[in-house]
Image (cartoon, rainbow, N blue to C red):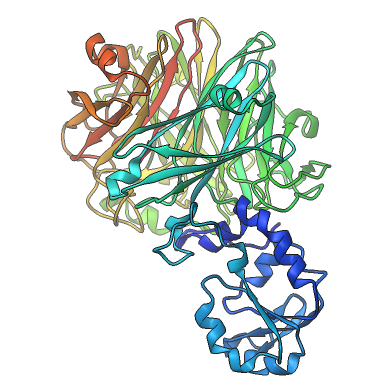
Amino acid sequence: MLRIETFNNSRGGNAFFKAVTHPLAARAAPALLRRLGAGKVAIYDIDGQVEALAELYDLAGLDLAGCYVQDVAAIGGSRLGRPAQPVTALKESGAATVFVVAFDAERAVAHIRHLLPEGAEVITLDALRLPLSVVPAGRRYLDPLNFATNFVFFREAGGASTRLATANYWASYGAKEISLFLLLFDETGKPIAEWTEPVASGASAIAIDSRAVRARFGLPEFTGQLFVHAVGAVGHDVVKYALDTYGTDNGKQVFSCTHDANSWPADFYAGLPAPDADESVTLWVQNSQPCAIPAGAIGLNLMGDDKSATLDRIVAPFATVALDVGALLPKARWPQQIEITAGKYMVRPRYEVTGKRHRRIAHVNVERTDLKPDPKLSELRNLLGKGHILPAPILPTGRWRSLVLPTPMARTQEHLPISLSVYDSAGKECGRHSFGDLKRRDSVAIDIDKVRDADIADGGHMELVYDFSHGGEVDGWLHALFRYEDRASAHRAETSFGSHIFNTVLTYKDEPQSYAGRAPGLSTRLFLRLGSEPYDTLCHLIYPASTPWHATSATDLILHDGAGTEVARERVSIACGGSRFWRYHEAFAAPARLKAGANPYIVVRDITCRLFGYHGVLNGDGAFSLDHMFGF
């Protein structure tokens, strides 16, 4: 495990981590290490970051004269295996170089000028500072908005392609000028393309297709990762996107969608499904760190079983390795689920399921290490009604099967008392199932066909909620995997997500979640990317409510062209506790679609309630994709 903090649930993302692991910082690091290795060096660790830095870059070979701190409370603690000394003792160190472990360190250096050993050179972390073209002047360097970054699974190989789609949502927060710094790594971690993509002003569409990238740079086939840095970001320090995978590889149709990778690596992930009898599962291990992943650091274990099988090979910095789940866990079978020991080496990874005729990609989720059961959740039922709800579509039952598999998502979660309710589009309950008190080792998948008591011809939705009649040991981090199958073609799609408290003015901790500002979040702004012709786009909007809210939604479907200009708008109403399944070609007439041109998108906007949405693409021959939407 890397001993670094990437994300804290109370403080958010760690900008220092992003600054020192940025691929351009990694490129500058060897020169910094050579300078530090030229003689005896004293470490001035102002903010307690040198241990984290040493996890990423090799500081072990330095000729240390000592480690020094400013905080009196830190004196005597350990730094790089040395006792931390007061910085007032620095002059006696005899160091030829003083390494100040901080960015924007001019003031800190000025404070210790009189304490420097005679003739000592001062080096700071500004040696790893990114160029102004990537981090413009105007903010303090470690402002999180300077590091709006993410990684993207990116492939153009064997007939399989990828396409990233998003919009300049930073413009809605006041951003004047946005560009994307892009760096493409191949399977070995070697950079094979580097460029800056200008982004048009306003809420313009952004699309990056692997076919176009390969043609532009004359590249061979590749399976790797694309690093994206949004320059000039305002409002959001995460690059959110939808990612479509498409094509045909060795006779198998590749057709699926997923979303952004979450830019902070975690210790553990979960929700990786074991292969079904006629399938194989590949976990894409993509190193997002500037240091190698040691052999044995990536592990898989069945949920509830501490015995882990590990990847017995080194993964180079920024490299990609296809890990066959069946090779490590040959007896694992759906609906068993798998935990991933990731050690903070990779952002939320994708997995790929290969069947007889189709391949699909989805993602696992962060398994929390900081959560404990919260007894107050059961005590607040009279105020919060249903409380946490995990909603998901039931696609029209004449064409599709819908399945749900609850997935533990906290290391301390030993019990999961939950129940499942099935609703038609109007919000009428038409089936219920109690899972009872699931134990950590239990993997129980439910086919909605066995729960519903009627056909749901126009689509409906399911809700997982805590069932306190079976116990109160819950933590508010309720997750599940949802799998869908076309009854005729057998093509499958799957997605996973977690619960929230929805549509109540009362708040508990940071719920109902808000994308901007403090809780409660009681409005909707969702991004819907649109499949290019001849593909159609499906969207499933759900109106969950923890307590009774407005009887119907007032939901606008706003069609934009690639420049972000509104082309058309349709108003729809969704019953509270209900849902709406719709298709782009049905909602907007041909003239509006034609006017929208290339790279159009839809914003789902509602100022009266919080909706939860899922999107996908239909290709007309039974293949389809499905994932949850993102908001901003």
